[in-house]
Image (tube, rainbow, N blue to C red; front, side, top):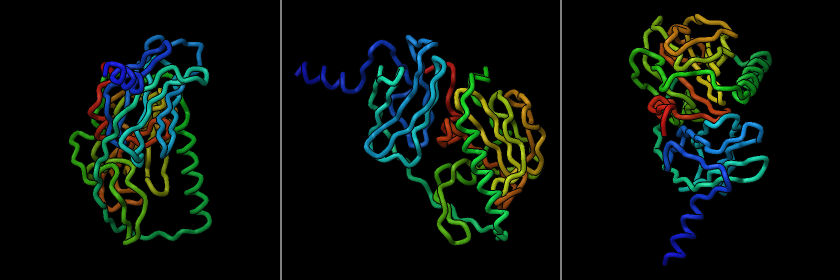
Length: 277
């Protein structure tokens, strides 16, 4: 019996030198994970990999603290967490995955003519965001917890909702929509560098902030942008105002969180602390 128990513990978690402390042992789909690495070597090449038979997702590691996200659409009850060093696995742990049920979101928006020029614009903007979210920098924030992007957070459409737009099935809702009035101030959730501040076809007036360690936040549908690309902001700084630009039905803030271009549930991230496990 003791041999069986020992084998099970070995299967759940093992280490060849580095030890990883995670902020939790089970994760919801769309959840945000924090890994602290004991024995981290600055000159080594590290990577976090989440993997099961349904998929594989990788996250860069440059410091002894690293972030990752369990994808919304991951299947299965478990997923394996690997820390790789110079291409070899040095730590592994089996994580339980809890699946949420997401509601259907039906909206009707004014149709806009889609020309070749518009399609080109949409493709270029999507490529810009995908490329932006893949850029990894050092940690740029010092806050222990995220600042609320609005003074009062009233969810109108949650992360993960299945979208039906003008009667047609679309993708999932990759952020959280918060109720707001036109002109309400929008606050930076953490310190960081503004890497996108422009008008985009779907998200309207949009700001993206790089917080370092692969963590980005996105603020969309603004009526006004109060920062410019290249600015450094602190948590709580006003970066714009609530509006209804882009594909939108009413004034609100669409708030998104990305870790190495993997979407995370903003409400789960807002509840985390970055200074402990």
